[in-house]
Image 1 (cartoon, rainbow, N blue to C red):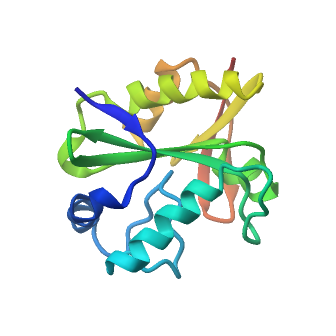
Image 2 (cartoon, rainbow, N blue to C red):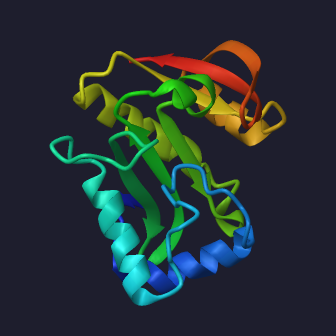
Amino acid sequence: MPELITPTSDLHASWLAAQREWGPDAHLDGGGLGSDDDVDTPEGFAAWVERLRRQSDRTLPVDHGRVHATYWWITEGDTYLGAIDLRHYLNGFLLDAGGHIGYSVRPSARRRGLATWALAAVLHEARVLGMDRVLLTCDPDNEASIRTIEGNGGVLEDIRETLIGPKRRYWIGL
């Protein structure tokens, strides 16, 4: 049975196995991984996990270009299956291209409804934070994300060119 958990260093080996499935240069939506994060060593991985945890604390400052966000990992037992995050507010980039919520599921765990399930759970968390609607984006040809977002009530606002390429932009009312 899958569950959403707070990121933990205990899943380092499983997280690395998932990263190998995606490939070394893949962008992991909802993962919070920066280009300068060292996730290969146990110490670097632990530091990254701690940064993810701190990012949800609105009393602490966040790094330049980032916003406060809460991260969860999609797991089954001790297996890392993916990640999802809820950005507490939007900066200009997120309003244009990134949205409030990002998610990714490792290739070997896809087609099980995990993204749809995780998104529904995080929409509840957005309500708890007092949000009345959230923005989600996806690539125009990402049929799985289109189904996930629309299946959770997403209403297409537009498709636009952004700094990171064309994006479908959806709003979900809470």
